[in-house]
Length: 185
Image 1 (cartoon, rainbow, N blue to C red):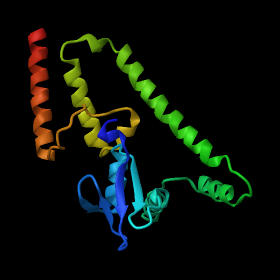
Image 2 (image 1 turned 180 degrees about the vertical axis):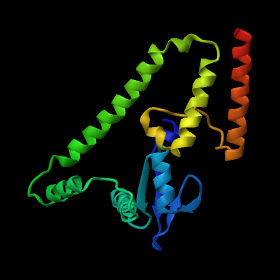
Image 3 (image 1 turned 90 degrees about the vertical axis):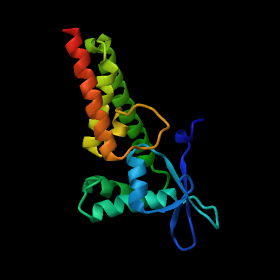
Image 4 (image 1 turned 135 degrees about the horizontal axis):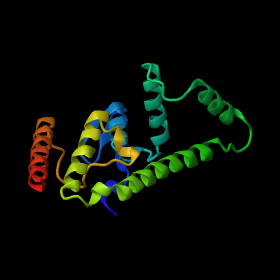
């Protein structure tokens, strides 16, 4: 299994500080939210007891976004969630939400696959380069949010380049693509 497929282990120390075991540094809730938006799965455990605290911290991230005025869920949905947790017996709401999000991710992925397969430009020389540029542009424009929507940057194990280097690389790729297109004419 690839390293990126495993959940990133975050340890919570007695001081309540969160420690990223992959990068060997302390992280904030916002850092964890950014990792999740980039498509990483995380697991947060208490160092001393070994208790899994992931749910608690994910709910805290959502609550902090809500408190800043960034609506995550409509009030009606929040009311239904509270009702489902207060209802005696097993609730189907958590399973329904999980299945709904899985269907959404699968649908987005299938749509992007079909769009790529049906695209007549896919056979054009330089299409892969153009597609990589488009994906990098989408990622830059959405601040990494596009990672869960079926768009992804080309795979690679290299470290994330600085933004200036990213822009230079995109400019170079665009120049290469324009050169290739001019040769086709």
